[in-house]
Length: 326
Image 1 (cartoon, rainbow, N blue to C red):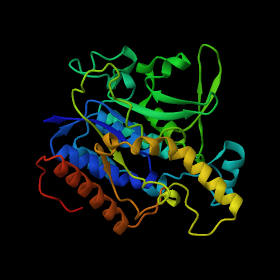
Image 2: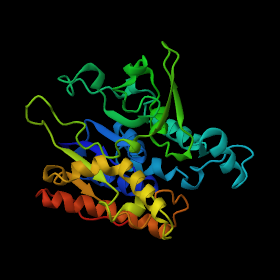
Image 3: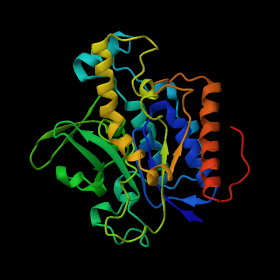
């Protein structure tokens, strides 16, 4: 049994490849003391942190109906519901189906709150108390202009991290602006309300989150799993425009938005020590919000995720099992 911390990038439907990669690592004998993730990365990370093995992960994801994730609020009418959602709730879709599905799967694994994901007694004893958890979910507090690393940062809102719902935190992390309704988190002491959106706004690939800062060597490696290609080639993966040309002002706005989402992470990726621990998956087959993805594309994402792990481990001179088709 080998150990590695995991950092999982967000990427919507592309996250099928993340799931395949995590399953492959589990099949190769890895266990994960700590996992950090954004959006769909947080979802996959939550299942793995709760103890789902390869077979259980597959069964959990088999019960996820992708087409139901963009759930309309009443009156549940195409275009009308999306328009009302944008005007009244700042998001076209509610996101309740996803949150409820994840909560059900986590409870079946014996994990409902972050208190259920405390590090094992032999893990993390040299960490600050607020960081002794198997899972970290990245979200963005736009009210205070800050990144939230949950459960680490619940103290900023005077909340007991052990009592906070894992599914609620992941739902906050997947609040893709304008697509899913932003979430609200109230400080029980001050009464102040924070508006929370997708963690990708400030950090979509926090590969450095578990790095030691005390000068001591790491006890085990950190592996990052990445879905989006480097800029500028990957600009349409982050901000799809249906292949249509944009007027110069809109093109500039597009580049500013993309830089806001992934520019910080791109800076990290330019360092060789980060590239060497990153499993990069080709996910060009699918769009971030392609919830009606056909079977052929789904299979390609799964295959690419597994093959990326095999290639990564081979480069580390580690033995991997024979490939398995999707």
